[in-house]
Image 1: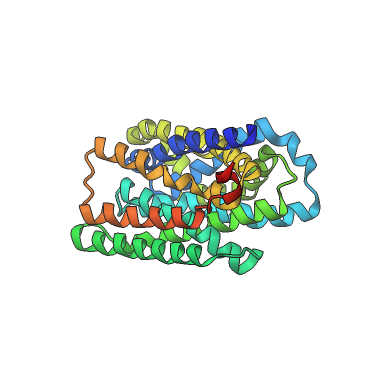
Image 2 (image 1 turned 90 degrees about the horizontal axis):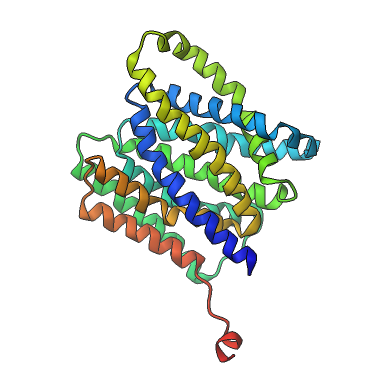
Length: 298
């Protein structure tokens, strides 16, 4: 019973933290390029994690590091860049809705590579969710001609990376603490991100750029709360629950993100909202459990 309460508490907390991440990315892009936003997000988060979690790395074996390397690239390195790139062309609210395909991809990756078995109802849910994604992207391309919806592919790839990460952690790294997994994953992402940052010249530009001085606070909030803290909580959630339940945080993220986007002046059409609802319905169908008849009789 305690684990059930804890996993819901983590789910709700993460929905608020990650739901606000999209508007923070939007504000960060006012002063920085997408590569700089993604790189600084990783470097700031990694620095904090090294300070509080460096000792936990001693618990990792050579085999653990192999899986951490894959999981770290899938979830800690590529997605921060992909989300920043996507939001140069797509609103924060729509980006968050597109991210709702993560539980569906978690299921598909689990079936293809990790031996997960699906029932007919769950297969239908996956197909419905993917259909909702197509509706959402098509509606966006038609109603927002000033936005390039090909950039939606960055969100799709990020969601796919999260799907691999969740399944890997659940199957191969669940014996490690959430702090160890998170710190090691960002340890993998730190040096490539730092090289990219040096290539962009961000450190030289920062000295004389007032827009960067203002936007850096958004990146720091994004890194420390939306990346470092959130990933520790998320890895804890994976440990407490199933991979698909953990990915279901994307049920609630769009609600928070769309609210922030609306307050920031973003508009979302009825068809786009419909596409988002179709995605969420498909994800719900995949996760829904049949009631236990014996429990109902009791």
